[in-house]
Picture 1 (cartoon, rainbow, N blue to C red):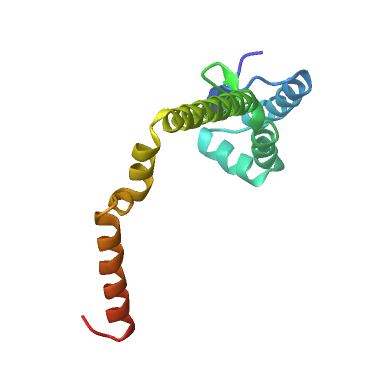
Picture 2 (tube, one colour):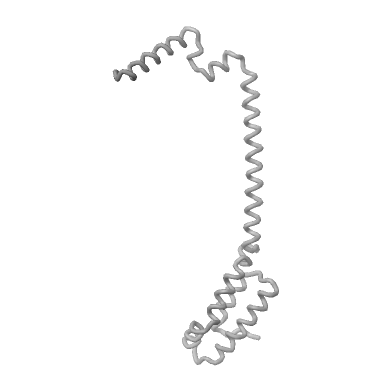
Length: 152
């Protein structure tokens, strides 16, 4: 059965869906009713008005909503695309976790390989140097006391 010219655009929208068998049956039934309505109309304007006033318009919208997960983009349905994104996210998270663990282990091994003096200097800065450390601590104490009493 050839599609009425006024229904072609609506039917083409559904070509972007990979409908299951029951969905195809619903679509065919709905379009048969729309074809009957279109054949009784003098022009497309009259058809569009009668379609808007009939429950067929809402049924068409309901079909689009009901089968939204079967909408095709890049040869995959919406559900298939969501599943692909979930797989990619899971793989990415696992890869990032492994990378993070490896970096942490390498850092720990590198720190343990350093001599104690270098490691102390890395974490304590100049405070661990024998003469300079006490001077820095003394200056910090003076700053703390001056802040405590409101002096600069």
